[in-house]
Image (cartoon, rainbow, N blue to C red; front, side):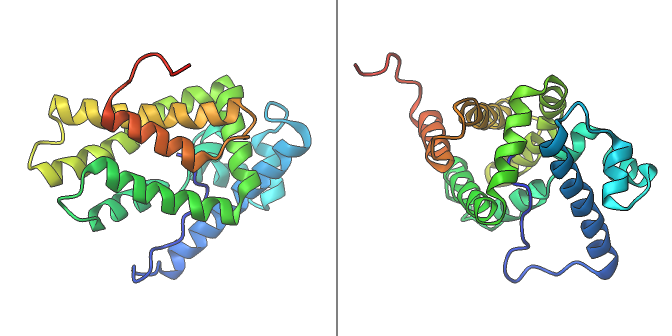
Length: 210
């Protein structure tokens, strides 16, 4: 997803010192990466340069992020998504629950780092290696949705219908983000997300009105 950083929900247990240090290192690596990419472009930015800018070793970078693409794509959204979906009413349609959670994430994201969000989504659409890695990582978020849907419906997370619905949602939201970036981020992303979720709920209407 697009959120770069997600704060812990109110009342959630706060991470310990070790986890805070890890998060601080991840953020330093990501910040250095974004800064270098803005200055010289994605392809010209090397892991060695990122490590130097973040004041860590290249091996530390790889310990946190297996590939350069993962630095751009990895965020704290997946744990946030799973926790927040579990806190929604069990009788609420999953699409509506997802709508609420995404609004929370997007609101925080834009308030904190709108330029980072635009840069990340631009790279997702323009850099083949980043887009390829993003498609690979979609299965992780899809797995979270599978578990959430299974918990609400009493079905197995591996059921075909559960998997198809979950990955359909993830794919649709990914394309929504791509559409937003390809149009120069001129549209309101939350509004685009609402349009996508409305379409998934009501079904595809066919030709647009003249």
